[in-house]
Length: 413
Image 1 (cartoon, rainbow, N blue to C red):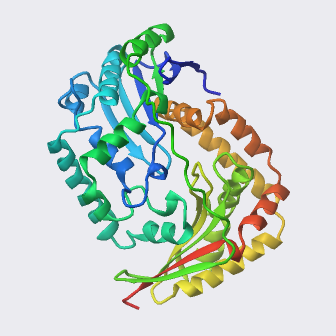
Image 2: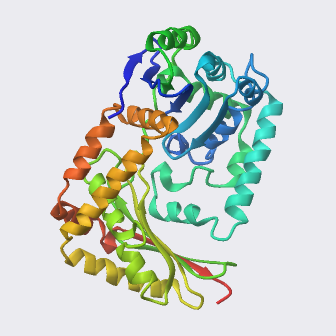
Image 3: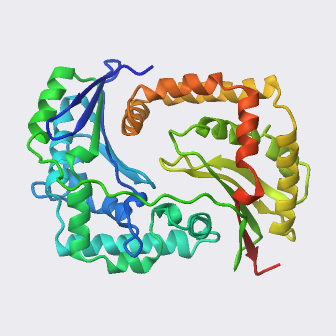
C-alpha cells in the first residue's frame, strides 16, 4: 500500500501527495488524460507531437531543460494510446521550481512557428527512423489497422501516416492544446521529502489560477465485436518471417481483464513459460515467442508474436502456436503454475515500490483510472483469481472468430 493524500483544486486539477522522508529527493509526475485514442483520422500523432512541443519552452521559460538542470533536476516523458506522462526528479528543496516549470507550460506553452516547425522535423525524423526504416518497424501500424476498424486504437501513438504530421496546421495544434492541456484534464502527483501542507500551498499558488477547459470531452467511437478471423500477408525486406496473432479482450477496468493478464503470464512470462518451452526450445520454427496484453483503457488486445528461424514460415508458426494454445485451453492449470505467476506478480509489485519515481507514476496512473486505491484493490483481486476463472476467460478470448493475424513475410526466403 502506498500512503497518500488527495485533493482537488477548484479548477479540477487532481493532486496526490506521497511524503517519503527516507530520501532527500522529490518527484513530480503529471498525467494528461490524452493519448492517440483522443485523435481523429487525418490528424493522428498529435498527442505524441505534443510531448515534444512541451519541451520547447513557455512564456517565462525559454529552455525547460536548462532551467531544470540549474537546480539539479532531470525530466522525461512518454505518450501512449491513453495518456501523456511528464515527470521530474530533483532535490526536494527545489520542488517549487518544478511547479513553476510545469504550470507555465500547462498554461502558456510556446507555440511559435519556429517551435512548431522544429519539433515537427524531429517527430517526422523519429517516424522515419523507428517505424519506416527499421526491420519490422511498421508492425504495429499493420496490426492496429487490421484489428480495429472504428476505434482510434487503429493507429499507433506515433501516428497513422507521416503525412498527418506534415499536415498539422497552427489551428490544429492550438485547439489540441487548449482542449487537452488543462488542469481539469490532469493529475499531479508529488512524492518524496515534502511536507503535505507546504506542497498543497505551492500547488495552489502555481496551478490554482489556471482556468479549466470549458469544452467537454468528445465521445470515442467504440469498436464493434469481431465475428470472423482477419488476416494480412505483408512482404518486406526483413531477415526472416515474423508472426503476430491478436485477440480482442476486455478494457483495463473491465471484467476479465486481470484473467487475460494472467493467461499471458502463464503462457509467455519468463524462460519457464509454456511458449518458451514448447515453441522455442523444442521446435525449429520459432527463434522467439512472446505473449502480452496491451493494457489499454478501452477494450484492447491479447497478442502472441514471434520471429521465425531462417527458412521457416509464419504459417508454420501459426499452426504450431494454435496447437499449443489448444492444448492449454483443454488442460487444467496446475496449482504450481498458478502460484508461480501470482508470486511473479507479488515480486513485481515489490520491485516497483522501491523507487520513488515508480511510486509516483503508479499513483498517477491509478488516479486517472479512478482512484489510487485501485492499485491495491486490483492486486488483491488478481491474487484471488482461481485457475478455473483463468481458463474460462482464455476460452472466451482465444478463438478464431476473434483473431487477427499478421503474416510478416521475408522477401529473402
